[in-house]
Length: 398
Image 1: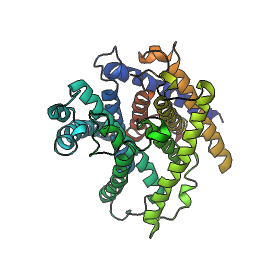
Image 2: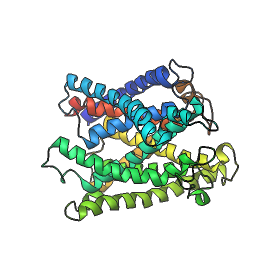
Image 3: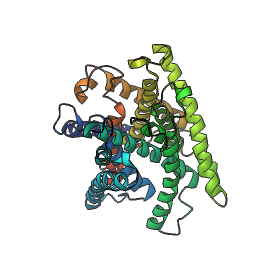
Image 4: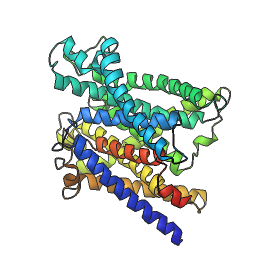
């Protein structure tokens, strides 16, 4: 018992250290009154989302982790991840796909195309929003694919070949998800709306907004539930699905469909709670009355819960480990929810979070989304856990 308590105290101390590091990174790169001021907000948000996606792809798809805890390998993987960010963001999106395929992925291509509002700042914000949406699509498919396919399918092919096969399978579903859930919103950002390139937002009648924040909130609730099953519930019930034969296709499809349905129910539940505090949203409503903000706030709350899940798994070693299975799952779930609510309070508290992050006080600020800070902190935590093998903490609990 004393050793467990000592481990948790060490984990809490390392968590505080991670928050301190996050404060430094945020104020150097993203804070409105910081040094580089990249948080505009979509440009900085897109850079963070792209980096988080790279870390997840490296570790969850290609298995590039540092389980031996070697310092040189940790530094190499970190360097590769940052190089990957520049190649993906500025090479692939801005100077390849945006120039030779889909204009709106590159601000330079948007400006060159001309038209109303085609100046660099707006163009960069629009292209950044598209990158955020595409990253979100991948972040939904990856855990669903992992839960449905597992590691058995290509285990005889070697890590590199299995990673490539998994990546292209994930990319196929992520591309479909992006085209259906987010592409119509991006094409409607321009004047006139690019109706021959993308259909009008089909969800507008239900969501009371043309914004794909509706789908972003829905998708991130699904991601949270998938990660909750994988980590807090030790893979149940996803681990019960077969992984061979036709189930190679059926299992990930069932995980996607199941997470979409369960995520939508959670999405509706979270908005119902908001309605208790702020009443029903309405078209033309500003601040917390705007339907698009309610949808975005569901996404933000899901981000806080995902961060709570990662904190509990990394810094508190997914405790408890000695209770019966059902009791373990309940304790972890309650801990994750409690941490997520505490993070929300921290972010929006005027005396602490506002000063810590140099942000404008209050809810529903048009140039503020907690998802940027949440994904940045999640990136730091994953780098610490997977590239640096949770240095000190994993050695202590090994």
